[in-house]
Length: 150
Image (cartoon, rainbow, N blue to C red):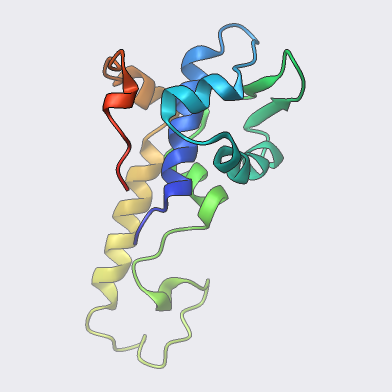
């Protein structure tokens, strides 16, 4: 169960937009990219599913950019991750709605994996963009001194 950079970066991008959009304003892609140290091209790779889901508004052109179409309190990390990379599963046999593993009826460890998946999902469903905004720490003035790692 590994959340990809797309999932992490999409979450950071949406929090940034929520924090900087003001009243019905659009946030420049260039500004988001600079603050979050994400290339504009990479951000474009995950904006389409967010727009299709009605979360992200995109306006092209000089006064364009991004804006949230819903309240930050309505968007959870679980929803973002599922839109960007699909639901997270602890083990392969839980990826389908019906567990087709021949051992599922008597698997000794299956309850543990189901429990882990439930805990992760419940937690990510409980964390909204608004929660992250409320917990935000001050950003350093020179982000170039703090590269984003992996």
